[in-house]
Image (cartoon, rainbow, N blue to C red; front, side, top):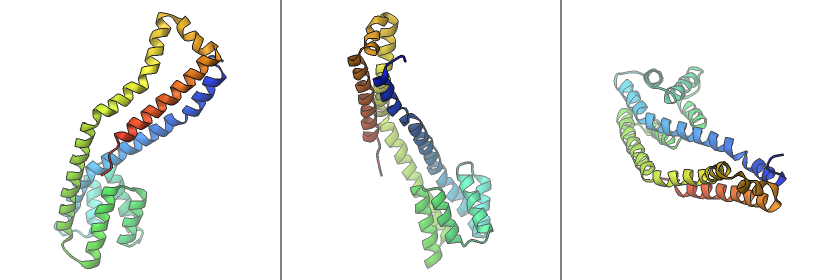
Length: 209
């Protein structure tokens, strides 16, 4: 009723992107927290094994000595092993529940050690050091790309802020965008270009390693 059917259709098409992005950001933040805590969890697991605990006991000890989200993953692993699942099967269940690359690397190392033998404590400590370096690299990448991410935020906020300034200065400048078909089409095009620019900048700032 306010902006016309064209702008309403454009906003209706763009609206589902917002909750999807919110969920994606939450998932990415949770993944980052898990990756940052995993090296410490592996150190705790290695210390428990070095103290003479069995693998299930060491995992339970790790769950009690860490914080979410890693502690929740370790608790799930303990529960599966307590229910009678084999260790390898429980680890695979955990990887399905927490599809994190760092966790996959640690699980592959544990499975390999259980198959061919070797010093599990030393392997866990080496993996923890490797993952710690990976976390440091990810932090450096985020610091380097911070300016690009800020540019995306500025671009996304530029049109609404400009429209608010014009609306407060002279509402008649803005009314033509809502009252005419050409204005509504221009607003719909602006929304589409805003989303495209934001998506392109986000894609350019995403570094895979």
